[in-house]
Image: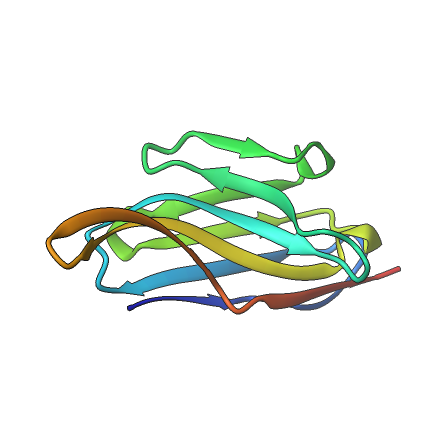
Amino acid sequence: QVTLVESGGGLVQAGGSLRLSCAASGSILRVNAMGWYRQAPGKQRELVAAITSGGSTNYADSVKGRFTISRDNAKNTVYLQMNSLKPEDTAVYYCNADCTVLAGSTLRSKEYWGQGTQVTVSS
């Protein structure tokens, strides 16, 4: 069983900052890529930022230069520092992790999701 627990969401004024955290725990042999997605009301879930176990990152064009993704491999934790927030950043933010787990006697790569954390940016 693998669990992703997110924290750090909330209400902030436009131009403000928030930092999201997501810790993976459970029967994990290795955490591979980790990322943050978001879903606004009436819209599809979209990738915000992702980071490999080696530290390579990629970002949605809409957040480049404002958001920074990082991770602490020792803690199986990923962070999203969000600066210069805009009302259009308002969404539920979900943590995602690709983990190597032992399924019976087989190593498998499985994808897990957090429960989501609300980020609301007021104008």
